[in-house]
Image (cartoon, rainbow, N blue to C red; front, top):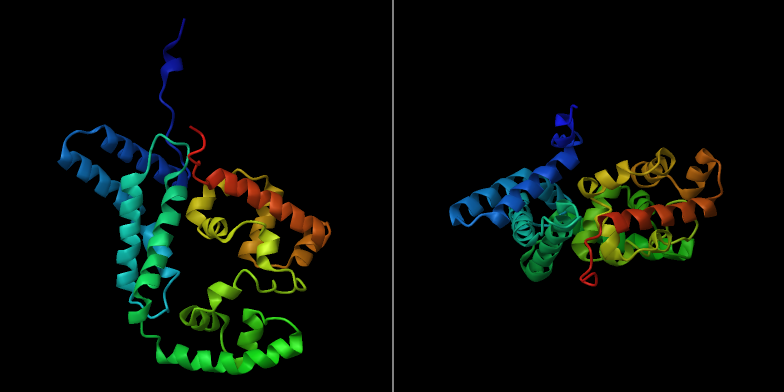
Length: 271
């Protein structure tokens, strides 16, 4: 009888994100088991190096707010180090699902604690003045807060520049979830997502979402791509897949709920 085949070791993952998570878990598991301090430090540094590009990618989302890119990279890297120190490799939670909120929190804390030292670039200051002058008229005409694109069109600027100016002014975080979606009447973004702001932030990073997205059926993956990558309205998505706008809204709620459960770190309640 040929039984040798039954004890073969499983093949490592071929998907890049899953392979990185597999390698990170392996390094941190070996670190947890090691007793030599030099070995533990070397394994920790390897795990950090493996995920450093993700930390820098998160830092890049905060560019244009008056802080040097190198400083942002350093703060994000500190968040990664903290996550690697405290991550439990025996859990089912992917490392990045745990690390990304920690890294983002570290960068946001830096802005909160050091904002009094940040000098807003002159170009953004001028844009803030233009936005402040145009906004009241748009609110009066539209009977609601203008979208970023409407603000940009009104002052002849790029949407990215308007976003940077509002972020530097501290306004964007307030209006981002409450503003109407482009082309979706007055449906606020928060209502469409039906998740809190902290949970939604986790959906912003493709590195965290990739394994979860790959588990979705093709139709649901297409809906997510249309909404959050191609930024189509719910009405346009409905027209493409043959359902109503309300059905698209319900589908998105269900999809995002499943994705959130898949990537959320487990709570301490499961003792």
